[in-house]
Length: 100
Image 1: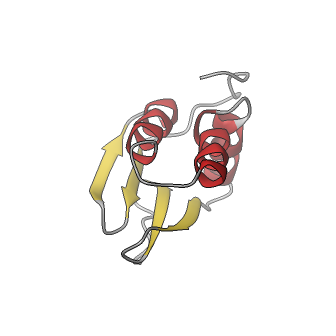
Image 2: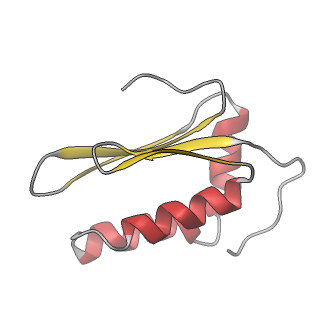
């Protein structure tokens, strides 16, 4: 993963792809982003969606962006649609998981 390391690491985090992958906990945000990318890239997404997720999850500023929203008490919430129905990729700090 590229991009500069943030001043203070954030973690652990819980990630999920609703309706596709059960929630999983990661101690480090970079590991969570990489795992999310490995799951997302296998889905039948169009090239535009896939490129957008690639930028959001492993692009140059992905780690800084993710850690910034987590520090603010927010989380990543990235909706997408497959043929079956809408889904949401989420990443939240442990203890701040929001019911979907």
